[in-house]
Length: 248
Image (cartoon, rainbow, N blue to C red):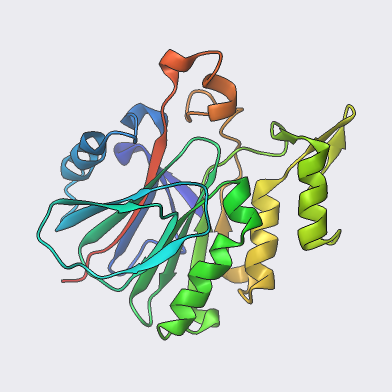
């Protein structure tokens, strides 16, 4: 279940948080997640104990890495990466989104955690399956992995061109039912498509939590690229999502 934690200005999943794992999807009032100091300040204010902040320098790809901490720097940036898996403790992994979907992963049995940035390109390239495959490769059983899909743009607002619709149909077929038509325009249900891809990869539906609101519709809570970038560029920013295994 997705819940709101008012004192931390964030949403979180009860499937992910618990035990030694702490994670969240921040709202826009926290500040612009494109700035590392905003994330560091948030973590310190909320008394998160961590050794390092790892930032993914996203490029809308399916590139993922297995992270092993090898230096003492407070901040480490992973270039050209949109997903990460790790068993390291007290490392905060963070991504930024403003319509794209953030996904968090946890396996309590192995201690593995993961995070991925899922825009339409990453979804098309099945980045979530790459994360799951990496976790299984590192010892996870698919039945033990828990996944939470955070706030992203809804099919109410995400209209796409027909050539992109055809691209998706050629890749995935008709069975996903993720492309509603309204007013002569095709829309993409990015949430539904990501849930379907996780299930196709072998994850039980009961192991998936997801966020029910649209970032573009809820201006008071979320930044939105589609809503703000061109019309209100001075108001545009990105939320950040994070996950950490706090076990010492």
